Amino acid sequence: MKTIRESPEHHFLTFLEQARQNGTDWYAIHCAQSETIIHDDMIADPAHIKGRLHEYRQSCEALVNRLTKAAVDFSDAMLYVFTDGDLLLLANPGGGIEENALQNFYRELAGDLSGRYCRYGNLSRDIYSYQRLVDERFISARRIQAYETMADEVRVSSLPLRRGRRKDTMVMIVEDDRFTAAYAANILNKDYEIIHAKIGEDAIIAYLDHAPDIVFLDIHLPGLSGHQTLDALRKIDPVAHIVMLSVDAVKTNIVEASKGGAAGFLKKPFTKDRMIAMVKASPFYKPPRAGGLPQHL
Image (cartoon, rainbow, N blue to C red; front, top):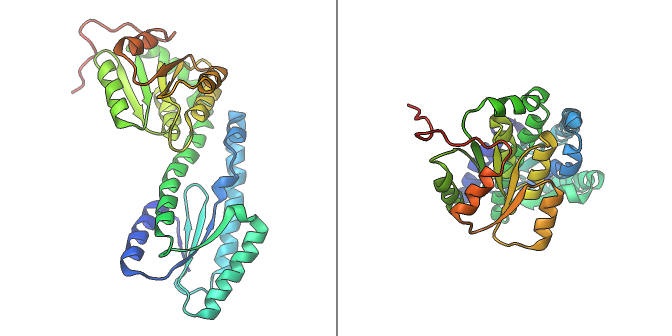
């Protein structure tokens, strides 16, 4: 059996396309270990994230060992060890006995792990489901990286220092809609530095990399929601100045954003004046210098 650990998401994406073209009948057992991670529990205390991740990886590795031993007799078997800890065992049964053995192993495994975290399928019949699965793995891998970044105590502690040393206001826009992101950037990029993230997971990493002065955070995001991202950012930086964005001004969204520590709420589509006013309201705001931002060659 072949175990794929190097760039597993990219490898599986390529394999899916090959399987779609040649119609090979592959069976799959998906152990969705990442579903055992509860975001609120993981970020409850950033000081404990490193230990929680270590325990999680140990659990995932134990399951890798179990699958490796059990699948040794499956012909052409492959085990994908995804970055987020999910495992995908693929087997190409050469006959009825082997397929029965695979199904029996799945039932035993599902009984141990709970069916919610273990699923059985056919790659060719469920090709679109597995395409979605790999897309989810890319986002989930970034979430693990975001947790690892949150656990970097030195990087977290340097946030105020790095923010204070900067001469120009930096604005981070967290928005998956490219038109809204481009519109916001066009409003602000003459006088302010702009950082853009499309998903909450990348926003957490970018926040710790750049220590922005204000964040405009869309509520409706793939992966972590805007509210979950807000909670994570406020955990690592209680003074983070974050304004929530949404196409709908539902009262529950506004109330939840306020309870989560958001500094404001901006309904889309927003005006230039409203957005700039929000930037100037940040306690970390730095007035634009004469002549605008320095030009970098």
